[in-house]
Length: 116
Image (cartoon, rainbow, N blue to C red; front, side, top):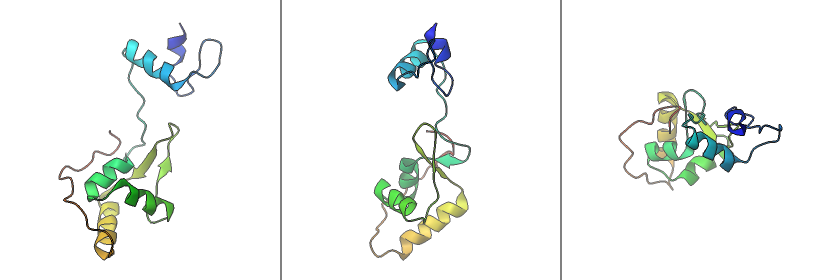
């Protein structure tokens, strides 16, 4: 069964060829297999960081590109941002000092690190 080999991080088929992402997704759904967590421990997505801070995702991407916010590209291709109270406070301070950013009311729920 090719689907049995598709559950690992390398996504190999029975003949050791790399399986397309859609095929892997279908196999996980069809066989009720858990999806791999795309983030590391203590990380959140760009979208979650933006919602928590009340800014657009483009602002978070800009901070990552300019080195103001560290981030990791995960093997799945997703960007994971290490997140804790100190990093959040630093980002909020950057927002307050900016003459260009006017934050929307922040999402009151704190993002759960490592979850979607």
